[in-house]
Image 1 (cartoon, rainbow, N blue to C red):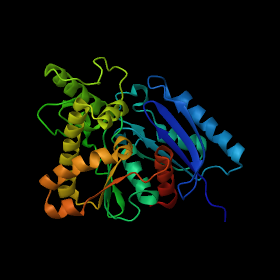
Image 2 (cartoon, rainbow, N blue to C red):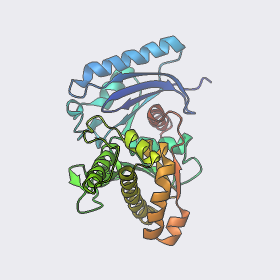
Image 3 (cartoon, rainbow, N blue to C red):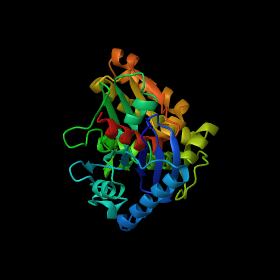
Image 4 (cartoon, helix red, strand yellow):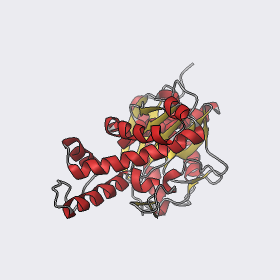
Length: 320
């Protein structure tokens, strides 16, 4: 019996990834295009469908048996559409799931990228050997995917894990429209806000820093590179961010008692910087038993964007 072909669509604010793969998480063919966030979704999706057809022809693969869509932000599970995605206004309310199901003639499974990520980690990554895990996206936004008793927990409205708006302090960097929020501290743009604030304070004390005054093109990777070089403002920013990450980890540890906390994207790439700072606060704030039990891991996925979407296709195919 021929193994079924799975299709994946990873929808983001800046890019759309499409791929074909199999149940082992292997990506057989893939393509990418830039997202036109303010343009109509329909022509962009038609181009994605064309890419699927071309990949099928080039690889001599069968038509996909199921499609998984990993999408940003809160979703409407009944209508199969995006709800509130500020950086993708034209996509809000578009019947994404039904449009692709009709044109590809296969069942479609759609979830937010945090839930899709923790599912993929459970299949092929850092949560294969545990029953309970939390995945933190730590990217342009900040959300959590919850794996509880080997099932992805989505909540009544499929909005469980939308932790970005939770306030960690009365003031601080702004994310999700809230000062001092999880997204304000722990998303990529939020980390840059923290670094710029520390640079300003550093200059006011008469100290030197390589963090630029004009940081309009500055990225999280630039800030972390300076922290590795020992820049004083960058190190203070890293300490603040690590402490807030530890505060969040302590809340998750005591509330959910997971086996593993998986740091995605930025956290995964720089685990050596974040883990000791996180662990210091986690051990202070969480119950001793839950803190000691909790393992901190990087993502175990080799191609997270594509594999998160393939995980949803696999789940749909086997009704897991």
